[in-house]
Image 1 (cartoon, rainbow, N blue to C red):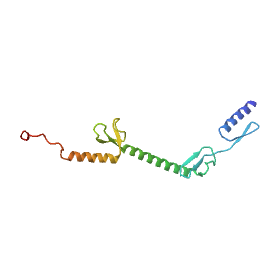
Image 2: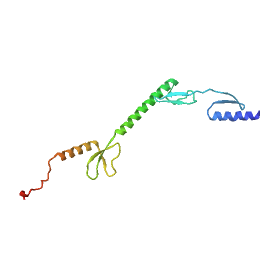
Image 3: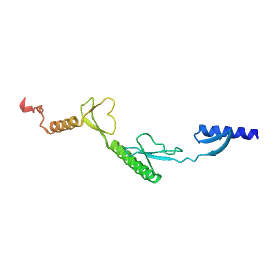
Image 4: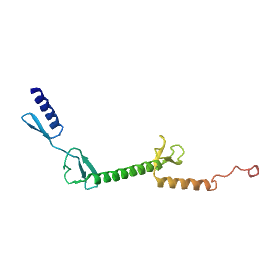
Length: 152
């Protein structure tokens, strides 16, 4: 009998440490309070669960029913997934505008950094440099052509 009481006390103490709320009278377990999970909602709309904590939400948050929690949790998860997909798509389509160190030619790097020797420039600087490059290539040459034998 003494061993059973000792076992009951050890189990009861373990249960109290784990937050099970066991009641003890003279070293004998006499009952167990029933706990349920608490579902809470923050003012931002985010939801969270407090396992085995009946009626305990953070200050300023309200307790909600499981069905509402489930619906809001799913909606929040779907929104987070959509945001993550959009962010990944934006990163994939992002452009980095670069200027070559040797020739000064502007170019676009697809979602990443410029080559190590090159430097990054703004989109407007890239546009201006491309326009200047196009204008200089379409302009007539500024150096005279080779003279012919009759012009010597």
